[in-house]
Image (cartoon, rainbow over all chains, first blue to last red; front, side, top):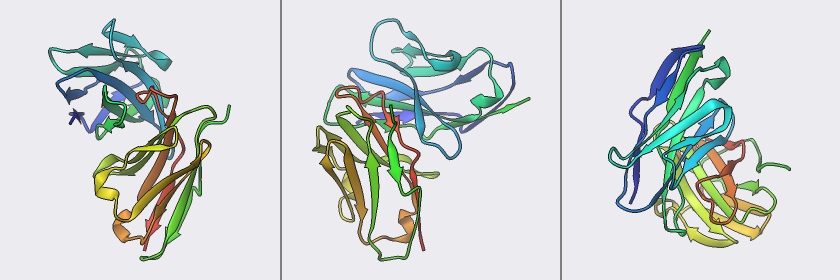
Length: 114
Length: 114
């Protein structure tokens, strides 16, 4: 069974600041990792994913994430946030078993102030 | 292309009632997922269909929750009988076959059970 941990429940930043959202997982085998964003009152929207290859993956709207096998992490970053980035961000994992769905972390709420 | 649609957007039920939530996945997507979202538990997988076959049924939800995929473009989630603890947002998502890590979510149905 895979688990996901997002250590920060809430992060507050100012517009133009950089932000890093932390995600750690536990699973012994091959794993797919992804990040989603959820604006208030909406469903989740896919940002990016990683399975293999370059550990730094680029997503939409300037987001990127870096995979680290040694740290069991997949942290999300953005160099310069905009007020529209205020949302809840979810990290998700799935193993290489097509019979299983995704496991999501509890989310990190990001509040961007002008 | 239309995204995932869910109806109704809001539902209020009395304890003991039967309610049916509806979902239309993105056209051409083979995988369909139902999740329950609450602040405390986060996103919990209720059901996962691959090409209309049930792959995962979210164990703990078996007794009163039943998801069906009537055809490749329509799914329902029945809760019978409803209990106040079922109050949550129910999200439907779909993905291309084999791309579970990249899911497209609907806006959700907010269920309130009195």
